[in-house]
Image (cartoon, rainbow, N blue to C red; front, side, top):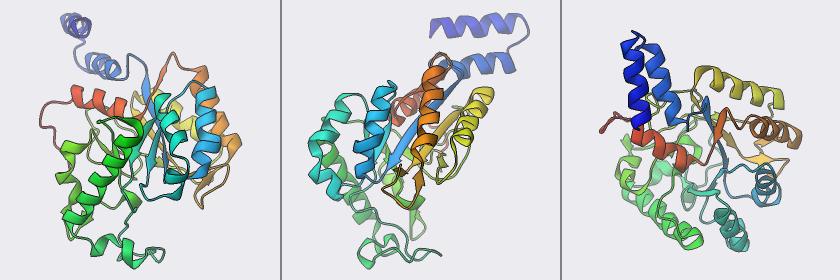
Length: 273
């Protein structure tokens, strides 16, 4: 912190306290690297444990896995999730039953039991907190992040996450964007949902983040199959290789670690929607 203050003061003395000082302060949030990249994987599916975790471990990278508490893959492979957490991967909260708003267009897949539009806010909050209890029993951690199922944030016009802010460091949304630490809304962190794009597209997103010194969050489901939303193994492998080869410039960490740094950097009471 002292080094950062001295650097900003030095830039100010040179009349460069504007963009250069802002950039220096921004890069300190990303562990003094050019940008931050977060790899997130949703829904607790077999591909996460069969292909993703081994690939990340091989590349010495850590990711965030957003688990649906009721997923049979959680119950059936609980020891493997625990080992993944022990190796530094985050087990994030993706709700107990993954409720989505069935009243929206294109939501024919939503069942009556898991229709968020039929939920009360208290029910949604209680189920998410119950999933936190389950996740804590797996990894022993009290700090983690949340991901909105289907990106749905409201029940009857009420932002239900408002009641959950004390329970999480941040919540990941589904809207795309590259943002500086100051721009990030920790109640709705932007990300790029990947479905069929090739490795060049993924790497180019990272290069854009490097050039703009911003946060880049990837949202994956299937990797090499296992989900209707999918990225190929070669594309995923190309991304991991680029991140590993450029680790001096790119900070790759689980969402909870990046969000904690952003929270520390933002002024108290930063506006969130």
